[in-house]
Length: 102
Image 1 (cartoon, rainbow, N blue to C red):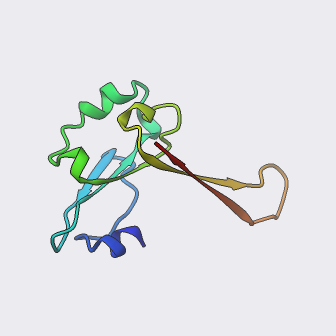
Image 2: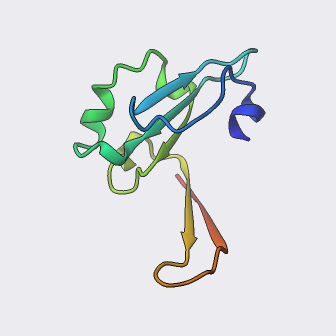
């Protein structure tokens, strides 16, 4: 939905194996940078090693599994946390918490 709203090129799928994927805008909007930080252990230093070919301040960046890894990327961000029941349960309800920071 975010990729569609931004009008970016290509299907937005999880970049698990490539860690980051850039989806350029089909118009004059910002590119979408989609990062899966699950396998990153070095925080922002590893993010810089990805050699993304876009200017981060001019992009919309979505980071999966970024908590505790990439907070220093920017002071201004929207943190989205999806809570779900764990353990032996059939509860498929999700609770979403949005927190604006900066």
